[in-house]
Every structure is written in structure tokens, then in C-alpha cells.
Length: 149
Image (tube, rainbow, N blue to C red):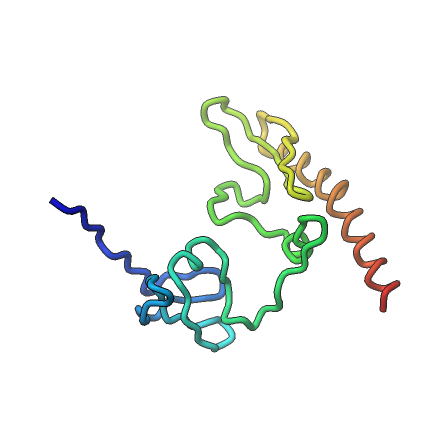
């Protein structure tokens, strides 16, 4: 007997700046959705692009600027992943070890900053790493942009 998956209904769900309004005609044989952006624009987006975070607006947001594998806008915005439960980017709870883990991603590499018994210590480690890696990177990026204008 054949296996049949129940079609996923994303109606009403939010993905970054997009709210799913209704199903749309398939795009390239893939399920797609009609979405409204926070800016008021509408677009049709494939399920995988919504759920994978590949599309976050109707196109009103400029494309991200990557330098050496690092997204400048993401660093500036201090974004946290959608599955983050601590409220602080790069800090999460490791239940098995009963520790708070601090990490930072920079130039395509995730760096382990340590495991901490206290949440505040993990947050402090992350903030120090942000200044060390991101602060210097952003200052140099801004200087190079200014010099090239």
C-alpha cells in the first residue's frame, strides 16, 4: 500500500517578515504559498524557502552582504536563531551536562566559548567574544567601505 503524506498547512504562520495568507499554485512542481510582507507587499514563496529561512521578505529588504563568509547585517542586528530558548544569541542550555553553553559563529566557523553553571557567565563570555570578533570586523568593514567611496 502506498505512503501518503498529509499536506502541510502554513496558513497564518509567520516567517520573518512574511505571513502566509493561503496556498498558491505550485512553483517548479513544489508547494508554494501566497504571503504578505510587513511592508504590505505580497509574494509567492515555496514551502522549503519559507521553512529554511531562504526568503524572509517580499524582496523589500536588500540582499545580505557577506564578507569572508560572515553576514554583516546579521551581526549588526544581533539576531538569534528561531530555536533559541535563552533569549541571547549563542547561549543555550545543555541539559545533559547541566551547563549553559556559549558559542559564536564567525567567518564560517562555530567557536565554543565554554560551559558555565551560571547563565550570566555564559552571556558575559558571548558578549566578550562579540566585541572581540564582531566589533573589530565591523569597524574594519566600515573603514574599508568609507575608503572605497
